[in-house]
Each structure stands twice: as C-alpha cells, then as structure tokens.
Amino acid sequence: MNFYDRFSVAGKVAVVTGAARGLGKGYALGLASAGAIVLCGDVNENNARETAEAIRASGGQAEGLFLDVTHPGAVDALFSDAASRLGKLDIVVNNAGVEEINDFVSVTEGQYDKIMSVNLRGVFFTAQAAARIMMKQRRGKIVNIGSLGSAIGLAQSSVYCGAKGGVVQITRTMAIELAKYNIQVNAIGPGYFRTPMTEPFFQDPEHRRWIEERIPAGRVGTAEDLLGTLVFLCSDASNYLTGQIVYVDGGWLAS
Image (cartoon, rainbow, N blue to C red):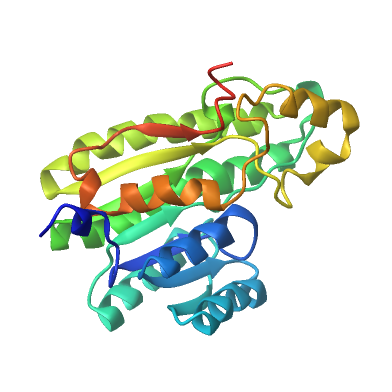
C-alpha cells in the first residue's frame, strides 16, 4: 500500500445516521464521492432515499433506509442485515441528533427525554450495534458526532450540551475497550454550520453576529469543510488515532 492509498475509503461499507438532511447528508455525499458504499439512514425515510438517489445520480453506490436510533433492536437488525448482504461493515458515522432551544428552567421532561434519547442514548447503542459486528471482523471505524457544546456551555442548550459532553466521554471509553479489536472510535466536533437544525440561530440577528464575529476563519462552515477530517478518520491513515475529538470550527474554540 502506498502512502496515499492509506487515505482511501473506496469500497468500504459505511452507514451514516441522520443522513436525510444537514451535515448528515453532507457526510453521506462526501463518503460516497470518496468511493464508499453508503447506507443513508434516517427517521425521514423519503429524504434518506433522496440522499441515496443523489449519490447514485453522481455515479456512487448508496441505499436510503428508515432508521430510528432510539430503537436499539432495529439498529442492530439493520446493521446485521447490511453486513450480511454486503459482506462487511467498515464505517459508522453516528450523526443523528436533535435540538430544541429552551431556557434551562423551562425545559420539560419531554424535551429532555427526546434530546437525550437521540443524542446520547442513540449514539451509545448505535455504536454498540456496530461494535458487535466489527469485533468479529477485527477492524472498523466508528465516528461519533459531538459539537462545540461538547467543550463549552451554550445558553438555551443545556440538555443538548449535556448530551454532547457525554458523547466525548463514551467515545473515549469505547475507544479503550475496542482498541484490541483494531476498531478506532473518534468524534468530530463541528463548529457553526448553517443547517436546518441551526437555522434558528442565524435567523436571530444578534445571535448570528455573536457567532460570526468569533470565527477567526471569517466565515461559517460548509459541509465540505468537514469531509477531509471525516475521510481521514474513516481511513487506514487514522489506524493509530482513537479516543479523540477533532473540532472543525474555523478556530472558534481557539478564539
């Protein structure tokens, strides 16, 4: 294998959760453009299928599937079926997430349970289902998706930040336990990207100014800005990197 081949994901089987829109769609499109076979999972099955169709229209290989990460049994069944049909499961991008902005003192039990169920519980059991297959293969890449809220507190996002902080800790502990099986577990912490989930922030002029003034790179990120880091973490080039969170934020945290 030459040096550059180590960065290839061509022919690898990848599952991206939350692939119907936003950054998840970007992850799916990016891995496919790099040659991976991508299963696009989301509770919005129609949009997941649209993501897969966009990939196929560009010459890639993809399927759009219904996937609800709050039901571990269904996740396990989907992963097992994919590994059986395609012969392996190389990559899981654990992206599915939700947010409901609210003051800490006004958060309802329903909001708390919804956010935690998807953003932490869902990440945990999705990674667990992937790991069970990858342990038998003795190889695999799990990329969890954190946030700036994994590192700092953000007003009106107390539950979201709590869940994303938890993502960092479970990433570390998964990495420790799975290292002996040649499975690397890392996380990406995106900065501020304009997506359907973050759009309310950008619709508020004061909040938008607060975001943009703190980005040393001078602009809000695009999905393409994440793909280099994602492909690296999914490739053999990162085989000795595990238990880390890589913040891709245009320097936001550094400032």
